[in-house]
Image (cartoon, rainbow, N blue to C red; front, top):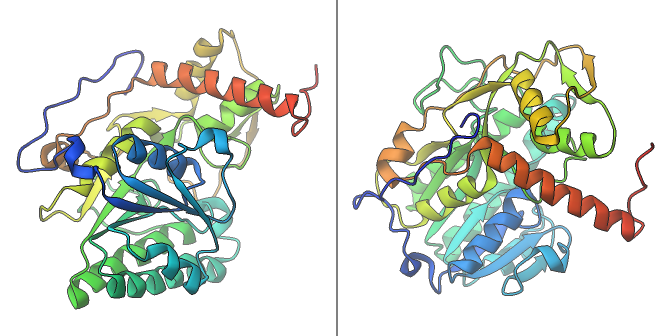
Length: 346
């Protein structure tokens, strides 16, 4: 996914997932973490595909960003009764809840590992009792492999996370395997690269592209950890949503799939693309020491999901950046109009 080149969608392999409307039409889907960046986009796409969607989150998302057909339920992931009530009568559960982010997770690993993994075990018990058809889990292609021996990274590569966040994701993956082995619960794991796009606010230290766009629009320097030569795999949120929808109907043998562009870009290259997108000769940067949780390079091998599902990324980086900038500019303008955000210093 480099420059302005787009991607044509490959035909869906008959042996993979059926992406027709009949796959999801009428399916009852619960999205845990539905008010987050991934969740809002997924809820809307599922509703557009004809699914009956419930968004479960700690707080209600703003009405204007969530499809009006989506039911809203609030609660905490650790609240077993709230989860049981939300799971009841569902067909498919999308588990998008994460404890924190890689950098902050290492400050208190015990808290990280005691949160989402344990709550997920309770969730799986509830799903077993409710006879859920499938659990789809959003894992982290960026954190779960740790420092790779080579790139692009296939699903069979060693999983040696260097953050408690990555270990938490791996624990959840193994729990899904265990519950399939013991109780026959079907599941699918998507190891997602570095997504960006609409609804990624950028002010919560989650997502480099979202954070950088937010800082440019707020007249703040871009924070660069290290030299800027760290390489990542960036993917537009629409392509991530496509992957989620594709795996719903998949019943093949591969339970873990990478979701990425398959192309590595350094932080410095992303800054250069943002300079072009904003029409700036130079964006001010603030360089800081490297962080222990940052792997030097992470690019995912997406051969498996392409062959099994006929999925491939379709949003070119430059198109994605332009659309994301437009969305965030409008979002920040509305927030300032409502008084929830100060005007940037001039």
